Length: 352
Figure 1: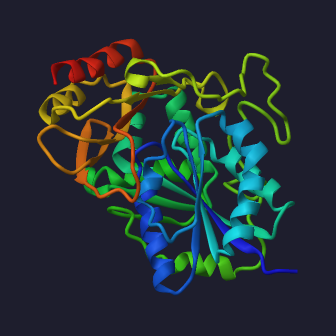
Figure 2: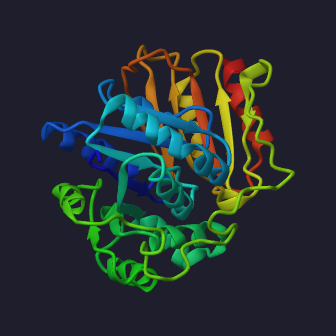
């Protein structure tokens, strides 16, 4: 029998730093002379994070759609093909921040029936400031999803500790330990961890299973049980592309399952927009929009920019895409007015 390929799931809520960790892990394995591969799942139409992965890293994308149906139905086949076509030494599955990791974990477990792989870890990245905010101000579905992501972890990374005061950190760690008492926990800035940890996990005998992940507490079986197929008649599995419409706006609001409270709005721009006007628009986004990202071209710059926004902070990084990419922005949140947002984004193009 061929040696099983180790798999690591990267979980964590939107904007926590999963892609930063993934980039560092890829670099680490490449420096060790090993071949990493990536499977990414995103809620939006375009996998923007995947565009940052270098050409020599095999990657497959699973975009839009319901996590339980898409992942459980297709992930096994995607992983099998990834292994068969690329013979990787390790695979990272980065799931959308709106996903409950138990569903990804179950999908990887199912995939082991199709090909030789072993799930070695479920790494949850926790945004320290984000969790603190939810501890102080909100309970709700988003907070419960973050709790499930923490419960399911076999490794915990408490990231962005530079954005909280030292006196707040013990409260954050205590809240995490109430949810997951056993997973090793590391406090970080920009997910700087000793990545040799991953290789140590891979050398350990046995794979992580759905039953052993987390602390034995409920790991998010809120919406469906193990092995249950999605038979909701209201859930359309037809993802065919619609006709071209002005501004090519797409509405992919999830209707149920783990991210049923999460709304996704994808907006394609027909041309460059004014950078200052866009920044002003982002600055007045309602608090219900807690994550946004995109690849944008501005009228006052020559290069495209990767745009990131999480919990009232925005960042723009000049990039040189490896392929032709759309001028697009994706907004993720809860119960915001997509109509109003679409109108304001469209107005940017009209102003230009």
